[in-house]
Length: 116
Length: 109
Image 1 (tube, rainbow over the protein chains, first blue to last red):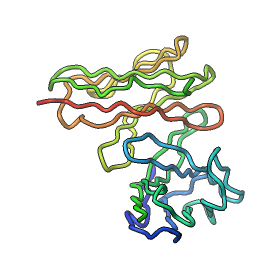
Image 2: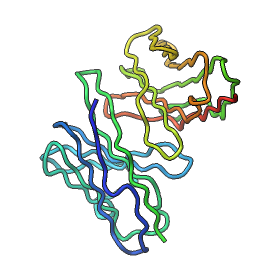
Image 3: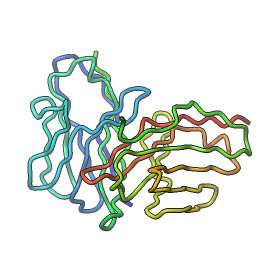
Image 4: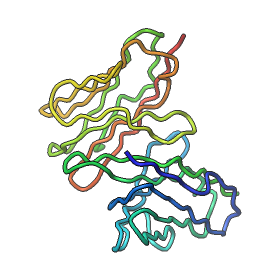
């Protein structure tokens, strides 16, 4: 498994501002993922972040709104830009670990975001 | 059709009973299957994974996989109030992992 930390753990932000969420893992990993989980809902994948390449975004998510950095194998950031109340959610990073065909995802503790 | 479907719940069982959580998936080529537990306000925690047809037991938890039926389940024996949580089924498909909507389980003392 992997030990994953996220900063901040929670924040309250004003509409129109941006927030950058950091994800740090205790070992080198190739694949990192960013998810959103709205209250009472399941996980929605925002994007996959591989070190050394552009993030791959899922349908409905765009780089201008959710820019991602992946400067090395242990760290990634997700920025939520020009926030609106609809962006209020829990944002989770996860990493993939395990052997071929046994890849497993482990999640960070999440960042709880409230946009006023 | 959703890629990963779980029984909608909520599911309520008395303490000591067996809780049965079910999941079906659409991609016949999927190779690995996972159950996560998520307590309210917390992030998902991996509790079981299974790759081969049949049963896999870990303490009070048993995962069952039937690839022909594209079906995976989680049985929790001797359910405890501390098992009350949302359980997410996840399937590793060719391109990425997909999660079900989750089943909320309540174990009543």
